[in-house]
Image 1: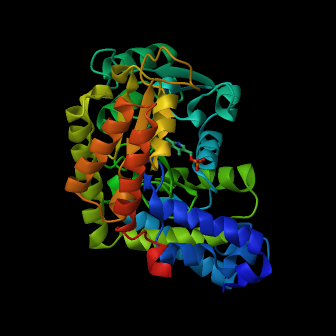
Image 2: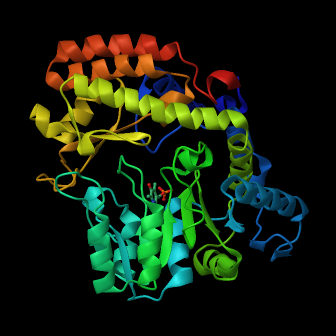
Length: 416
Ligand SMILES: *Cc1c(COP(=O)(O)O)cnc(C)c1O
């Protein structure tokens, strides 16, 4: 029995249930992944106990000799992994990384361009209910109606007109490669900084499966828990000339003490991503997404932009005459976990939606391959073709549970 199950059986039981859920379902939320046992161990370590306001060598508290070693190593690994001059590993999340990046670069009221939220942009790229939309004047760019890919001519036209101080490239539900070269040219033509929010694709960049923004971006923000497969957290990368502004925007600008336990997990994650195996992992994520896309199309589904270049797929549920909400719930009943999402020029609300977002990072972490993706696509097509069919959902669920149990979950199966 674990210490937790003795001291707090109620919470231990909830965590045990969550482990079973993670083992027995197909985790297809594109922003989720399974951190390794080593990442989980570091994240659950005694660094939880320590305050370390400031930066290595310049702390406001005593007792930070080991915190300094830890954070310095995390920074060095991050710089090596992404080929950048400066890394701030303290942001507690992607949202906080973005807040600090804006804070370091512009003033409230300034103009920023970001991707239209209903077409793939993130909440922190100007949503009116988010700090970003309340503090800054966001001008959204869109995807082409036909091709459903970012319209770079439109980005250029808008940038010349709006004269933003920052252009944000990066998305939360965009299945195609992003042209950082063109974004960089446009930004610098109009005197804007290019900020790349690579939260979703950081693992693909680290593994060489997406063009790195490092040579083109002035600021790069990211989460560490999506394709990068680390602990929950954020990070900001830049050249040296922006280092001081970014560091002071994180602390004391927007955060207090850094989460050293998360920084420990980040350092382990960067170490894992620096190994040659991670390149293979990134390649398999993308291959699996392509195989899944093919299978879904064969199953009669329409995919936004016709397919995928990365780890995620956006299904247009209109082809099946159902909403994203209905699709998400039907799949959940079959132990296939995904999230509904708006599609470009969606006719439904952001709550109901017409789309379904599917990703392969977590399934790939379990060792599933292209043939497995074909089976998964078959199950998804079956459920979505009969979303009210109790029998279908139950039959698929039984097959899914048996199938899923055969694939070990990193951080669960190897920690027991
Ligand atoms: C996930 C995500 C974020 C926010 O990350 P949190 O850790 O949830 O705050 C920011 N930007 C993009 C593009 C994301 O996909």
